[in-house]
Image 1 (tube, rainbow, N blue to C red):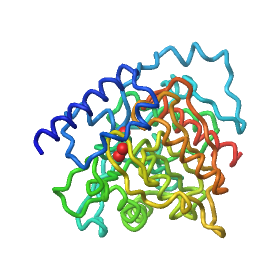
Image 2 (cartoon, helix red, strand yellow; image 1 turned 45 degrees about the horizontal axis):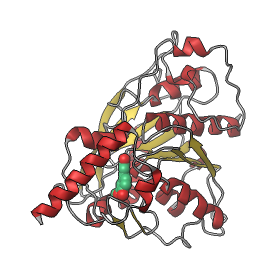
Image 3 (cartoon, rainbow, N blue to C red; image 1 turned 90 degrees about the vertical axis):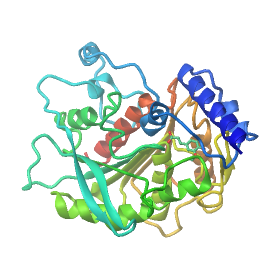
Image 4 (cartoon, rainbow, N blue to C red; image 1 turned 135 degrees about the horizontal axis):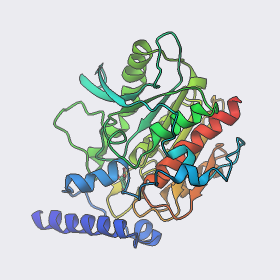
Length: 350
Ligand code: FER
């Protein structure tokens, strides 16, 4: 057993190293099922961080926004693969707020749980704001996006609001590991993933009511947005299909396997539903916008997001699918997804 754990740990570490060098091919990811096992995976905090909010990418230069002013951004319904630097960079004259931390009692988990929240810079209890719930990757928590310098969520939201494209919006980053046992740990085996699949209950029954009663929030599906990266992308798809009436605008970025039964080099996934079941119910109120996207050379989830798109298409469930050419399992994908989610929101609401 010990040997198995070490062999498996070595396989995971070597695949992460490959991920950083971007040499893993999609074929490696999707067809290499032989290593699937229920073994415990041991990883360093740094390696876990690469999953939680993406593999580190190069910083966008502070001058990038200025360099880009020549290429005007236009509000229309077109997806842009890359988040324009003018949205991902800090601009003079725009106020950016910082994430703060709060807690709520979760009946679902039987314990107090934390979340990070980004209130607009001039937040006022006299106004009301829409809310984006933004779900982190595996091994992450409510600090994953706030502490990742490459994740430009606060810049994108503030810049788009400054341009008048979107309303000022609250962003909530929950802890998506909704375990009832405080000692349970995430990992690459079916049992360790159950708390992620339980997050739907914590979100709908505990966190959303807490946010809506604590902050000046505009409620209802038109004002409630859902996004997630990787494991958070998988749960975004699951939650959206289960409760499509709650979220008007959704984006699943680089979604992890496991919505439907499958195997990859990390583990075998029993599946949250069958491929046949992966659809909106016939009479469902569906999101106005449901984006599924992924980097074209994602070294962690490979072509699983594309397969979700293909299943949804086969099942007649409306969504937008696009690939970010050249992006890995990284913040190029995260920032692209967040930007395009808000661009679609802006275009529908304009
Ligand atoms: C898996 C592949 C990737 C998986 C999870 C991930 C639970 C998640 C990666 C991430 O969140 O970055 O097989 O199984």
